[in-house]
Image (cartoon, rainbow, N blue to C red; front, side, top):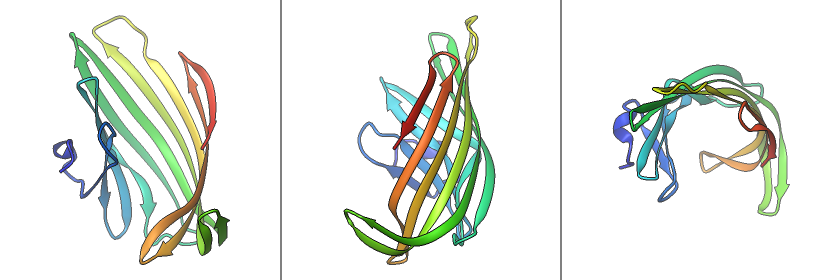
Length: 178
């Protein structure tokens, strides 16, 4: 029942967090959770990033010493006034279950948490077709640490922190922590 389901034929799981929010599309199986892309409407236009090579978010079983690396890619294309804008996304993700223990935070104490360290390197390139404008390149480097616990048969995120760096040929470098 999400707005862009027809654009993601292999999807069996969709997440929409509310009006004006993007819908995220996944394929969930007994061995992995694959990210197929997103769709959103902004300014009356639809924007759909469809991953031609889906991103592996998780592999199962997910335990201490689980390690996986994945290359992914996608394309978002839009047309306005005879100008086509193609945004290509290419990236790599490496995830390792590198620790476990107890997490204590304001919401409670959680034992037997698995720590996942995930490193992503992503390059977005935007190409304008129909006007003599150079392509834009944006580089993302993100490292995140997630502490997960199993509750009622479901993995629940108890604490997460992400450090990211974004370099753009048009906007310089920005650093973030969330």
